[in-house]
Image (cartoon, rainbow, N blue to C red; front, side, top):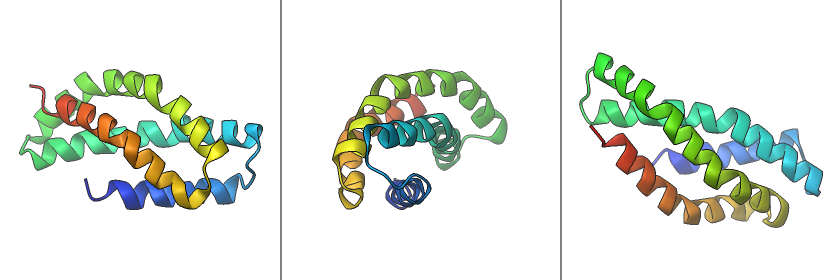
Length: 118
């Protein structure tokens, strides 16, 4: 979706201002904030947005969010912590979004499949 790039890119800038270093400890802190704070909120916004765009009623959208959110978040934790740890430690800020978008091709395919399950 077109909002992913600006939202994630902005988030990386905030993380880099909040935790400016590039050490292993700094990368771990960034990953923990990203996965502990940003990922749950982002998924909690993404799934209902897709539901609304697909014409689900508010009640159906809420039920779908309750059904799918936990599974999507757990699946997120199988993939993204390792990706983000490497991304925050090895990749300069101006390339991080590109790295994430490469991995996101697979992730977004999963989210699309999850969002379109009945």
